[in-house]
Each structure stands twice: as structure tokens, then as C-alpha cells.
Length: 141
Length: 141
DNA sequence: CCACAAACGTTATTTTATAACATTTTTGGA
DNA sequence: TCCAAAAATGTTATAAAATAACGTTTGTGG
Ligand SMILES: [Zn+2]
Ligand SMILES: [Zn+2]
Ligand SMILES: [Zn+2]
Ligand SMILES: [Zn+2]
Image (cartoon, rainbow over all chains, first blue to last red; front, side, top):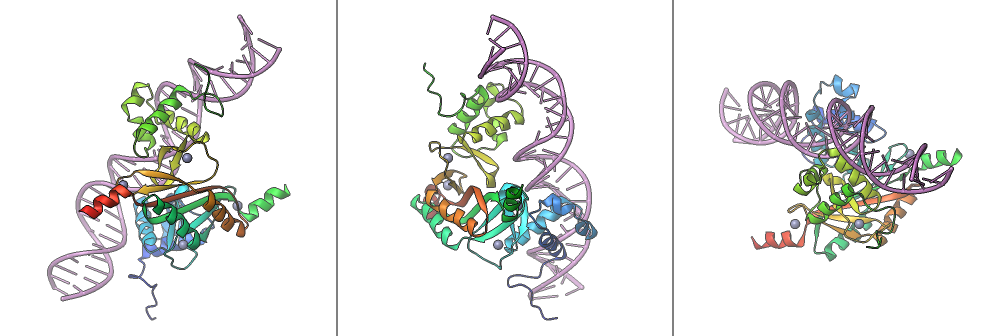
């Protein structure tokens, strides 16, 4: 099979691939310890928190995984590779998140920073609220 | 002295006042354990992490203190009370932060969320980069 | 084959945050 | 004033999240 590995860098290692697959299979962000507790992870022989954190770090370096700061949790990137900022919508009812691109707003935010003489290199946005499903369920009750 | 306590709610308790003063005196965000380690805190008789966390929770409820998620640290609000979103500029060199108001951008961000059917109730923005002082120092070297 | 770097395994430890439960203080009526 | 409920506090223990330290294995280029 030809090497159509992803754009940058060497192929993912087995641990990295295992963790990425786990995150893709989850319907919400997982903490490192959530990942560690998954059967598929144990079957792959990963037993220590550090093993998970190392894989997550590499996956984040590549932009394949994002960290949700306010949850101490990790989610796979469901957009292609992107270098502009994204934001996360976090449902406080079900815990699911949605990644939204912020090309336009990023410019605005970085501009506000520049007004203060601040040179921004990274923008993080996290918004909590209710997802459509949970809002509908709440309205029905 | 007349009770010109701040607008909402009862006066701050001694613990709350002590912690708030500590944060005001710091030149950068402090973790709960940073606060716990301060002489002024020990002198006030506060010895346990929980004591600090409880005071911080109340101060955050009142909007007098903000939590910087990506630092697990707390900083006093240097604006008056505000109900619109703010963002934080975080210097990766010196660790100092700057709070910026985001009235206009908040509307935009919440709008992006609404496009997805998401009802936002809280917006958090954290931007890392270099503060003016650190940028100048770096340029001089 | 060898030298080097990256990834990994393992154990211990640090850092951050909360649970559980008893006690004290404050506050708002009766 | 007195009392009951609520809020805040003290104390101990524990949970949750992340990293340090060190040696071993694996992969890669020459
Ligand atoms: Zn993404
Ligand atoms: Zn939801
Ligand atoms: Zn503020
Ligand atoms: Zn700085």
C-alpha cells in the first residue's frame, strides 16, 4: 500500500493511533484517565497515565486532537488540519462539544490584543450552553 | 463607617477578603496553592486548600475574581463588575495577564454558536503571546 | 552494523481539586 | 431576645490530573 500517510511528519505510532481511534469513537471529550480506562486501550497494552499523555501530546502537536481547557479533556479534531483558531461549544447538559471555526473572529480578537501591544500566537475560545438536542429535550419537559 | 459595601450581596467574609487582597497584591494569576503559601494567608489562619477554594468560589460568583482555565489559576478582576464576556491575554514569558472586554466580539461568537442551534450562556477567551514588556526585552537581546 | 533520536515502560511523585462531617457564625423572623 | 435555618468554616482524608526520573526498546540514517 502506498504511503498516503497524513501530510506532515512520520506515520502515527501504534499508541498514538490507538488513542486517536479512541477519541474518534467517543461522542464527547475524554480525560486522559477516561481514555486509560477504555477496554481498547487496555487491550493495546497501555497501562500508565503517562503513556496516554505522551500520545495525546503528539496528537495535539499535529493538530489531530484538541484540549478543552475547562474540562481537562481531549477531543479529536473533526475538521481537517487548520492553523486558524477554533472555538468549542460545550453542552453543560450532555457534555458533548462542537468545534467551530473562527477565522473572522480570530482577526478581531487578535486585533483587540494588538491594541494592548500584545503579540498573540494562540487563541482559545470555549463557550458553554445547551446543545440543540438538550434544549429540545428541556423544552419538552 | 457607613455600609458602602459593594453592590450585591452581603459583605465579604474575612477569608474572602483575605484571598481577594492576596490576588490584588499579586502581579500575575495565582493558583489556589500559590495563595495558600502566602504569608498573609497563613497569618490569617488559613491552612487548608479547601479554605482557599471556598473563598475563590464565592469571589468568582460575585465576579470579583476570574479563573484562567489554561493556567489553573485565579486573578482578581481589574474592571468593575461586568456581565459581558472578557478575554485574557496571557504572556508566555512572564506569566502576567491582561483582561480585555469583548462586548462586540461576544455577540459575534454567540452568533456563531446560534448558527449551530447552540444557546450560549458563557464565553471564555484566552490568548497566549508576548506582553509589550517581554516583547521589548526580547527585541533588545 | 553502528550511532543517534524518538518513543515507550515503569514507578514514584507532584499538583490540583473535592468529599465527608463536625463546628461555628450569621441572619432573619417569632 | 431567642431560636431555627442557612452560610461559612475547620479538619481530615481522598480523588483527579499531570509530570519527573530513569532505564529500555524501537526505528532511522549513514
Ligand atoms: Zn480542529
Ligand atoms: Zn447537550
Ligand atoms: Zn473582569
Ligand atoms: Zn511578559
